[in-house]
Amino acid sequence: MKEKDIYILAIESSCDDTSASVIKNRQILSNIVANQEVHAQYGGVVPELASRAHQQNIVPVVLQAIKAANISKEDLNAIAFTKGPGLMGSLLVGASFAKSLSMALNIPLIEINHMQAHILAHFIEEDNMESPPFPFLCLTISGGHTQIVKVNDYFDMEILGQTIDDAVGEAFDKSAKILGLPYPGGPLIDKYAQKGNPDAYKFTKPRVGDMDFSFSGLKTGILYFINKNVEIDPDFISKNLNDICASIQNTIATILIDKMKNAVKHTNIKHIAIAGGVSANSEIRKRLIENQFGWKCYIPEFQYTTDNAAMIGISGYYKYLENSFADNNSLANPRMKF
Ligand code: KG4
Ligand code: ZN
Picture (cartoon, rainbow, N blue to C red):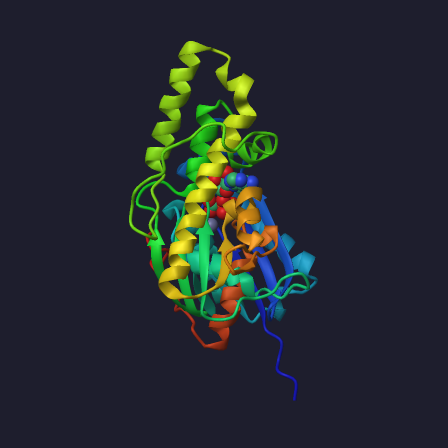
């Protein structure tokens, strides 16, 4: 007999994107993301504005996700939501909405860890995506996180290393800000770097544990370097933008690849997955895929690497299979650990 299909509505609201997705088993039927433009003028996410925008977006985004999936809400078997980590005010909007809807529809509620979900996005069923076999290593790189994780099973994960200060996305965005580029500047550094010389300038790489990261020193180094040169030539940035961006990107990519080499050496695991918004970076992708180290690299579709509810949906699916449900006292947890 054919197993019953499982339909889950997933909600993600941990930072500045309001997202809802409907998943049928491992297949994404819809994945709607409302970005919040309001933060660009402040050069970073403003938590209070983020939670207000989630309040405005959540109902239309959920309705759109259900409509685009071509189902009715009575077809749903469960509601999955991001419990943490993230911004408290933002998480609360998604958590309260998910709890209310699960009560109204009388279906189970599933709590999801946002960082695990970034990794489990690799198990979404798509023609052009291959799921990594267990155990594998995942490099999670976003605006909020930088981690190397050993993934033994769907919910058995170990953090091998992480940043002790800024996340890699922040390193890109803060460097871009120093260069006078708008927020978020990561994609712009990538764009200008295409035409630049990656060896034009050298920046000092941080000294931290084998698999840990630190980016705040790099940012300060870039700031001093730029200030010193602009003092000599006020047009230094505009004259050399491509080379500066290529050199910054080269430094960051080298740091990440070196750490992954250490992680492979420590674990002897050669299946490498990548997750988080920074995995869009062309240089980082290129170096991971080049495969000169004998790795096999797994990169999800772009829409599943940035913050999105589809990754919450696939995580919810595996929790549903384990009957791992939350009760209605469930709370958002901004500092949630694995
Ligand atoms: O995962 P994400 O969408 O949001 C969270 O932080 O959770 O990641 C956003 C980060 C931003 O810092 C952005 O600048 C960076 O990803 N980013 C990039 C690129 N595309 C996005 N950084 C470097 N190169 C890119 N192509
Ligand atoms: Zn994220």
